Structures are given as C-alpha cells and as structure tokens.
Amino acid sequence: MVIAIWNAAYDLGMAAGAFAAGLVVTSIGYPVTFVLTAAMILPALILVRRDRRP
Image (cartoon, rainbow, N blue to C red; front, top):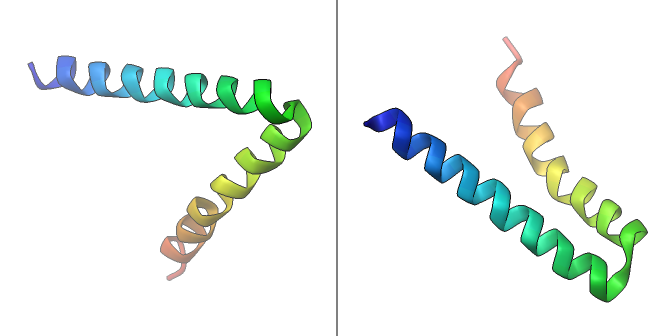
C-alpha cells in the first residue's frame, strides 16, 4: 500500500512540474524556462554537496 502512495505522489509531482513548465514556456519561452529550472536545481545541489562532506 505504501508503495502505491509513493508512486502516486511521485507521478503527481512529475505531472505538476511538467504542467508548470509548460505554462512558463508558453509565456516566456524555452531558454528562460531552462535557466529557471537550472536555478531551482542549484540549492538542491548545494545541499547534496554539503551532505557528502565527511
């Protein structure tokens, strides 16, 4: 049961992200959307790097 909830939440999150990206693309275009996506990933990369330190 838990795996079904996890899969549903994951799929809904992916769909919500794709929908939001589609809305952004239609209003400001692909290049800016890609830059915004990269900017939103940076904080996660910083946390991963900090977590991997001994």
